[in-house]
Image (cartoon, rainbow, N blue to C red):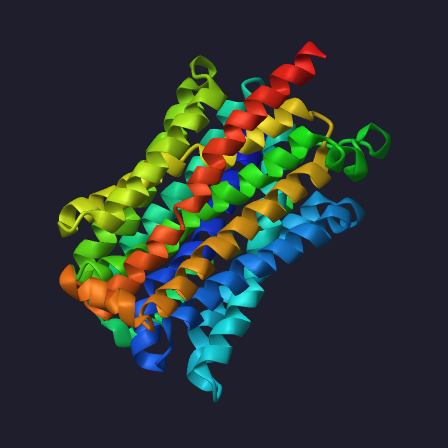
Length: 414
């Protein structure tokens, strides 16, 4: 059987579904981990930090590693790490003395796979024959969202049917996806990488003020998305006190659906949409969503605003990727890796910062008094405080897009 570039594209889609499994399965189990293993909000936030922090380190190492061992070996290794890490998540916490250390080991292993996938899939798609690169990139990233929807829906239903005590079966079942896709990547054709003499040196990229702004935008995009996405399930159940099934479906699941719809819309009609104006509007909507989620006391409104945040962040990550790739067409693996590093920095810091502020808020007598006057218990107050601090990231995004537009105009005039 002969394989085509269309099948390469489909394998890349499954790569992002694998990435979605790696990033979004554990947050659905945070309540289970908290109850079974007695871990705090900060420890949960630390798991998120370790996941994306590991991906960040892998992104940095991949700048040189991928060019040495090649795209095919790298992408197959990425899926092997993802599968092994997911299997470890289901096994290690139940067999070693410290369940939390078992969680950490599993997270580190699958995060290596997630980091490699993130660095590799976008440049593979960008290298494939065809026009409308920004639309293709957005459509690619929409599969992360549809993967997230699948993870939330299927996992939530299975947990409901099997019970929380059998949670460990879920990661083992989900490991079948990367196992399937690594076989695909062994066979599909890949375009030759940009030759060494054609690549834009990292030093030249880092000397460009526009590129530095793009890195800050990536950090803000990652933090804006994951601070809401990672905490949505726990926030719905403990912060808004809605049943877990309803909370997961109207919170992280609808968040992912709306994020997928946003990316698919741009993937299909992107050539008719002004990217920078769309990103500016996205950041403004994201700020509004965080504010409504935190301050509106009606749980269903707060929960739906949490979900609408998915639409607001839809274009941020792929949009900044596309905007930067258009400006630096010879950036190569190094450019995508640098963008991924700062994206993962945001994905790490955003949810972790929310966890830290949540714990600190619950220790503040003045804030607890304020919470009591507004009918909030300490956990609700803590989670709302953690969510509120994350609004700084879409604010940075808003400012960064405005500066990026001005800098590009001035560079074009010059």
